[in-house]
Length: 498
Picture (cartoon, helix red, strand yellow):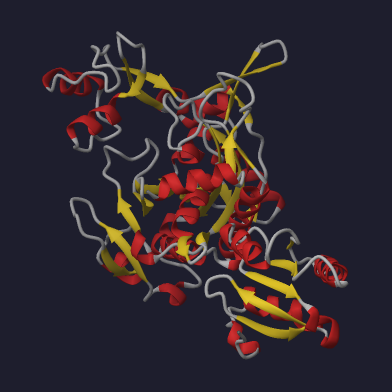
């Protein structure tokens, strides 16, 4: 099973692991990331930043993670952000009621199912604890908000459950100081916290996690005015409609003409989202946008398309694409008693509508790892897109003598000075070193051998094929740039050698 292989690799190579693991009874749902995992994770964020934030001329901010109670009264989270839970009366285990019923009955139960209906399903189907078969308590609501204590505790605060609230609170400031014009995206990446009753499946469902949020503010009367529409209007998206079991290939322009979405702006950003994850190396045939029924949608959303990827854990949601309309700005305006309207040049005012693209970094990391896991002659390896690999190139002296390490270290240093991320290794046979580099997804390896001393050439090897060419030492850096960023092939730079 791919999940087990990823967890074994993650543990052995310290990609990610339980936080505070040296202490007994450390709480579940918190994870640390080692050098390799942190590097891949950081590069996923950078691809998101380049492909979505920068290309779409969005503004990026960095908001506080702790906000006062009033913010979440305004957002609606204090009353509406909760899960239905049930407790075993025998072993005292807590479980999400809707998920337990779904697991036992093998039939999807919507998240918004009323408590009375959940209790009825448990009673009528004689559902017991899945651990000890004990009787279950009545279903009750459990708040997902994580409370925080500031100073002497006189001000009630919470860790943010989603990164977007800072964006909404900053909207008017951005409008005034950055001369914001609609439509305008505002983005941020940062931590979020949800008091999950049963965090599980490692980094895919945790209490602390990282989000890549983009909120697009626009005039609803201009929802069909989008500058780069011609670039994506014929692009096909993988769509799973309500009450359908088959994923359809639907062009962006057809999403609009068939009234599947409310306008071109929404179709445009759905297309950009799919293109982003294609760039990260996730196969198109494993993707889908699942149209979410109103009983399952978040309380603030008029339309939701969850971007999901098929994994060994099932279909995993990576991005919530929500049409939040004017819900957030209106609520914060009401509760803060502050005008949050957009002002046009002629003095007219508008509360903008919002299209949200909310992606989970940690779930994306897990999914990218699973989709990249391949089996080669020397064992499993990560066939990562080079732009998100933990290192761009490995540097290997063939042997630890004859001045080869000295030359290899000089090459390593020169590449680092040119901002190339290198991995130097001189331990074990070169074949074993290739396997170690492949395993963590390093796309290229430079080997310095005795011929290197004679003619200033090295071998350059590609991870996925094992094929090699010889190139001049001074050509290493420009060749790597072309291979990684310009999608050139190894054969473009020389003939393959044995």
